[in-house]
Amino acid sequence: MHVSNIQLPPELVDIIIAEFWYSEHPSNDRIAFMTACPLINSVWRDVYARITSRDVYVPKVAYLLHLSSIILWDNSPIYGCFPSDSTRTITCYVDLTQSADDAAKDPYSVFCSLPNYLGFRLCFPNIEQINLEMKFRVGWYCNTLSRSRQLFRTRVSIELNQATSQLSVLPAKWSVC
Image (cartoon, rainbow, N blue to C red):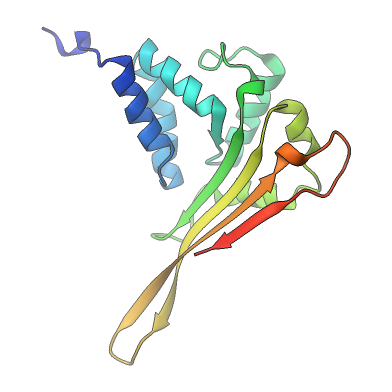
């Protein structure tokens, strides 16, 4: 049997994609996954589209523009059967543990500087949250002989499911660990 003829059961593909999608990854790894996964075959593409259209990750600013074009033109070869009203969360995850440069820093800044989120409610009518997450290390000294780097995680969850169609104050949850 030729290797290209072997297919995994859709249930296993679902587990593989979900495990990766809901785990923490640097932007470059997530971008590589987002690029390759839909190209494997139609099962991978369809499972990928279902999971990633429900919980969107924004690994770089260009992806925000890509999302805009998908919504505007409604002609995505990957997301064709998944309308924008299936989106529940949008997450921007920045991993600064290995480097001070992660592509997701730019969309993180965009999300933080938005004056309001009405546009997201119009584009994604059933969106519940925008999550802004960051992981980084800060150096500190225990004594003069050893240096330890403390890992920090921050998360701001903006609760859009409580937004009205008017400008309003939105509840946000903030956590640092």
